Image: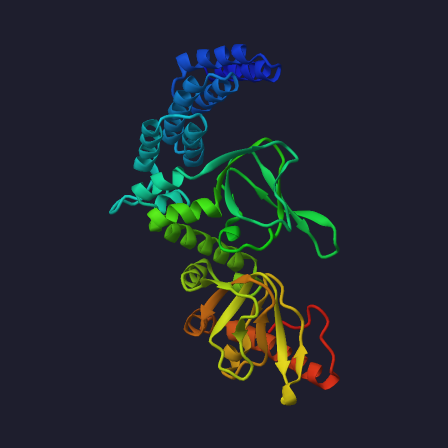
Amino acid sequence: MADMRGVGKARAVELASQGKLEEALGEYQGLLKSSPDDADVRQRVAELLEWLGRTADAAAAHETAALAWAKVEEPLRAVAACVALSRLGASDAAKLRCARALAERFAHCPGVVAERPVPLFSRLSREDFVALVGVLEVRAFFPGQAVVEEGAAGASMFALVEGRAEVVRALEDGARGVVGTVVPGDFFGELALVSEGPRLASVVATERAVLLELTRASLTAVAVRHPGVGEVLEDFYRRRLVDNLLRSNPLLSRLTAEQKAALSHDFMLRAVAPDEVLLAQGQPGDAFYVLLRGRCTPWLEQPGGRRMPLTELREGDVFGEISLLLDKPVSATVRADVKGVVLRLPRAAFEKHLLSQPGMKGLLMRMGTERLQNSARVLASGRVLHDGDLRV
């Protein structure tokens, strides 16, 4: 039977590729007679009805597909099918009925631990889940088409529902290279919701891709009526940013999984205004920082008001650890050059999670000593360090 379904699906795909949409629809509808719970076939029927302009039938089919996807634990596909109802002009009652059915299955239920928690959605209340589904949009991209472009202003985050994409960015030598792959279930672009800075990389579809998009404007609007949505979203992307940092930072990647989990709760996400001073030379250090977005320049303040700029801090750089390690005043002022975003780890959490780990304090001390020596050389030579020589 499975082989026959496979043959039938292949025949339907071939007919659709030839533009024979009615024939393809008939093939899929025939498959449903023997496999009514096949969510993929239900989805294809809904899409073909939409392409054929049979809007009312397409809306009903998308709702049925949403419930079928939910039954096989495919939340993003279910949500995408539900969101399609708005595009097809379905009634408010139909949209609400579909969203509530998905909320019953995937949203947070007090006192109940989900067997398979869904990223983001499982932490929303049912009311907030329904509200979020109401502002999501479905976007489709062809192979080779860019979802977002490196350097362009970002104003939304995405979840990949179907297909694949590659993350591409400019490398140190100026060439562009693939640095990651996006697969169904992955989220990306969330930093754009807290920063109006440029995208840090491009995401390019490598095959037909369907995505859910949440714009900053939609999030702002829904959070007014449902503040829980904003709170869950902020916690979601903060955790993702911290997890990425703990995985990729050479220093923090040394921690065990348990240590990383404990540390992730204490990092705080902060927006930074242009010209804001994050560390002031001569003052006690209050935190360990990671620059996520923007640029910062460290300055050595000298007698007479003379200031000597040190190497610019890039996105991904850490600073502030020297004064925490040595329990001495901050060795250089760090000022934001442009609007940005940082992760901040307060002194108490830094001492608890990092200085208490075997071997970690020694490693940090060596880093701090090298940086202080570099600062001393700058003062002696009167020149700015070459890029990469200093991280405050």
